[in-house]
Amino acid sequence: MKKFLITLVVALSALGAMAQANQDVYYVRRATLFDHLPVGKKDIIMLGNSLTDGAEWNELLGNRHVKNRGIVGDIVQGMYERMEPILKGQPKKIFIMGGVNDISHDVSGDSIARAIEKLIVLIKTRSPRTKIYLQSMLPFNNDVRLWKLLKDREHVVVEGNRALEQVARRQRVTWIDLYPLFVDENGKLKAEYTNDGLHLLGPAYLIWRDAIKPYF
Image (cartoon, rainbow, N blue to C red; front, side, top):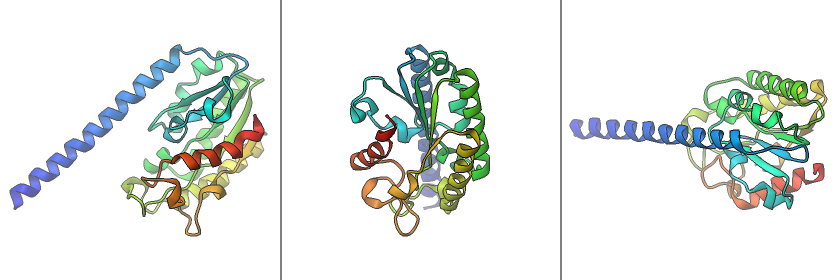
């Protein structure tokens, strides 16, 4: 039995390493693609992590100028570091959502807000005509599936959103608070909106779309 348990642990560790490697490979594939896709002055950029990556935004919004620049697993600093291909095109609008992956790396809500403020300052400096829309972080639900690195971290989303709202006011960008649309009475992502506790199902994307559509 002891030998079996050791073998099982090794196998699970290998699977974890493989999953991380696959995510890293995907990140590079997508980031390098974005390096070569054009961005123009009429374009609207959806910037974020897997939540943004998971939608067909131009179809949802019925607008061919909407371009998805979300990448699974991205943190705010990663978004910052891949802004050059976006900003050189001077896009019309940028919608930002980020932070949940930072939380999984044990980053505080205040630190996430500071990183996003740095990102906003970069956009304003490099592309001053671009309108910026800062979206709140969404809740997650560890009752649907346990995300170990997010265990007991629900409060960081709340604290982070509070700090992000202050960033939006300070930087005079539009704040879009999506959190109340997705949270249940226990402070978790509504179970009917997800099948893994973190990522969104189709009906949830329709709610997100309807919330941001007035800004288009």
